[in-house]
Length: 237
Image 1 (cartoon, helix red, strand yellow):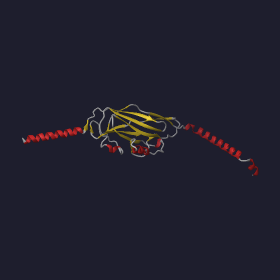
Image 2 (tube, helix red, strand yellow):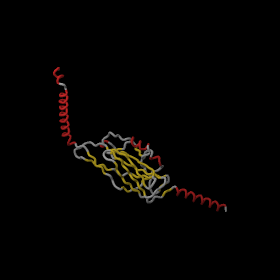
Image 3 (cartoon, one colour):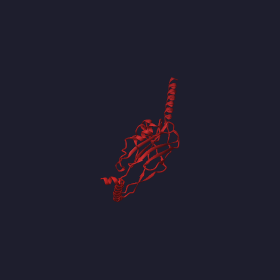
Image 4 (cartoon, one colour):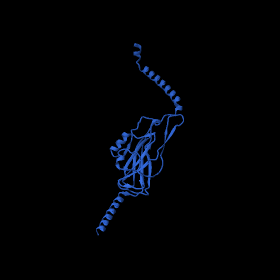
């Protein structure tokens, strides 16, 4: 009888343990995600807005995107700190970008944007800036294509079917959840930018015109100053 009671107790404890484990695991075998990109602004200063959508809402979860900006673009760390301080966007980078460098001398910049998943979707905003390009004699325009980001999902509970990401994330995104998992997704479209570049074949023409205009303006100023001198002052001299 005592053995039977012990077996019952062990069986109850085992069931409770299994229930606890199952409660801490989220089954997401068919989690469908989609990302769309919108670009706001014109010229050298624009905002990237990534809209992330998932087919089901998961409580206590966060989303993040790991984006590698090409050398022609950069994110200003001071601007990102300002956005994080006022709870506008949570964005971090590993190292500060040299904003004075031309695109040809710059490197890829890794940017991480993270946010809580309050609904089945969320919008992640990133302000970016374009770098200047060296003039050349072959291309008057250069196309910039943003690479697809890596979508990460982090939850307080465990998520099955998705491997833990080995990406090197930065603070504060890395401290929000203990583990981030990479989630496959569908990208609606890619955004292509066409920016003008200086033409070196026009260098001599621009130089000659600038030199000629400088001489003409100088002669005009001398003539104006000479006419403005009173005639009596000239006779006295």
